[in-house]
Image (cartoon, rainbow, N blue to C red; front, side, top):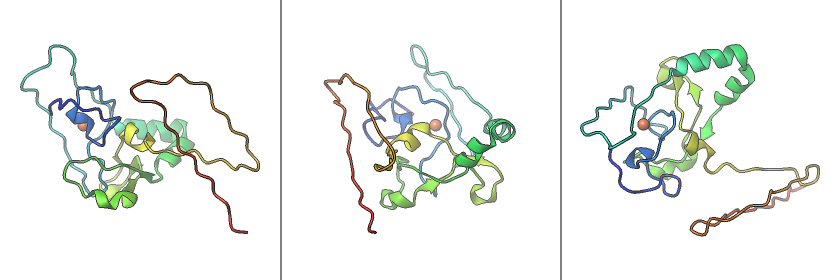
Length: 157
Ligand SMILES: [Fe+2]
C-alpha cells in the first residue's frame, strides 16, 4: 500500500492508495469480495505517522446489542456502497448493498465497515407537504465549491 497521490474523497480509489488517515474500517467495498484476513507488514516506515490500529468489531456488535439495539438493527440493514475495490466489477453498482453487521456467507457475525463509502451519496428526502427544510450559511472552498443536486418527485395519485 503506497501513496499514489490521490484523494479518496474526490475520486473512487481505495483509501489505502493515499496517505490519508483511514479511520477504522474493513477492507473491500465490493459485495462479492470479502477477504477473510488482511495482512499488513511495513517494509519501509513513513517519516512520521502511519501506525496501524485495530478494534474488535464483535465487541462493538455485542455492546450495541446491549446498549443501543435500535442502532444495531439499523446497522443490520443493507447499505448501498460505492465500489472502489481494485479489479471489482463496477457495473453492478446498485446491487452492491450489504449491512455493516451481518452474516455474510454463513460466517457468523461479520462486520463490513467503511464509513466514507456509505456516507458518500447519501441523499436527504423530505416530505415537502409536511416538513420544512433549511440550509445553514456556508463558505466555499475555491478549489472544490459546494455542489448540491436537488430532485423533485411528484407522486402519481
Ligand atoms: Fe484497509
